[in-house]
Amino acid sequence: MVNEEVVSLNILSAQARVWEQLSQIFTSTRIGSAYLFSGPPGCGKESLAIQFAQLLNCESPSQKPCNECPSCMRFNQLQHEKLQLILPLPMVKTKKSEGDNDSFSLGKGDLELVTDAIAKKSDDPFYKIQIPKANRILIQSVRELRKTLYLKSEASGRKIVLIFDAHLLSAGQGEAANALLKILEEPPKNTTLILITDHVELLLPTILSRCQRIGIPRLNDSFIQDWLRMKMVKESEIQFLAGLSLGNIHQARYLILQSVGDLMKLVNGLIKIITNNEPDQWRKFTQTYSRLAHQDTATFSFHFMMLKIWFRSVNRLQNNVNDILHSTSFKPMMDRILREFPNADFSAITFELEESILAIPQNLYMNLILTNLLIRIQKHLKS
Image (cartoon, rainbow, N blue to C red; front, side, top):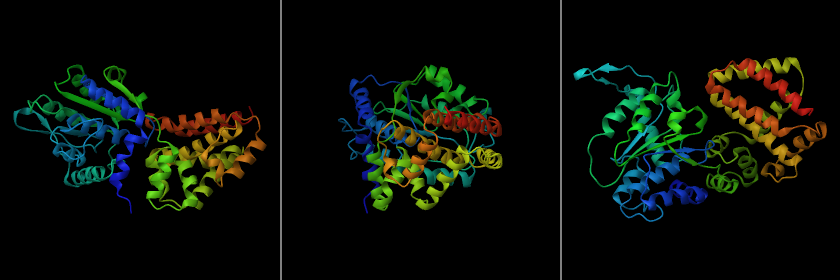
């Protein structure tokens, strides 16, 4: 069995262009006070941010962290004294402490979940921290951060703040975003904040304007295929799963827990529903996915992402562009759809599905969103 640590190190070569940019920032000695790492889900943003933070404090740096010095070892454990993690947490009650200052602490159960999640993240930088009922970054977290950042510390090294799922700063009334903005307006010396997000469009423009943007593309199919092989996936299933992953390592991790047969049945069934104009099936579809949008957003997003990837592949087939899914068991259904709808605008359908996924965090009326989606898909099929 191959060590997971070896996989995590490959992010530097898998995202070589981005890492070259980060290395140049380091060697220029003009390190900024705030960066925004943005890109599609599962592209390795968090892993790159950790590696960059590690490089900024490495005791024997070159173009990448040495992974041997005491500082690098502590960063590998996400336990470095110069590192602070900000992540979505469950709502907590604020208590008044001495001096009338607000303080807060997680309950024992939540604290154990967070500690365990950080330990898993240190073992596998691709692990996605998702704490139950944690749907926003709390203003208390930012206030506590502000207290510690302005304290004096050793001159060596650089304070690093990693903010995972940074778009959730804007959740609720956006109090956490406004509190963070005050830090960004007057950044502490020798400190770098790295905001990491899949949804840059949900961040305040005032926060965006104070961050240097680092765009990160999706991982290539060959990286995902290598990762699947290391997970002992059957060779006959690798192209199918890599194609459905679309460069998203989180999706690949989820897919290997599913039956390939069940995945085929799911996707083909959904394709039939949304390409056929049958009111009863449409009603059931909108009811089911409206409920999922509120009660199980992960499943909603997963199903719609499968549809998006499938239609993207059909669009490429229509335009004679190679795609990894063209050599899988999806091909017969794709050929049938192309024969049935030779003039369809599959690119527009892909866009419509993406918009439906993005509607979830905006708390829109999903029943109407989904009904309009089905109507627009019919229009694009007959373009």
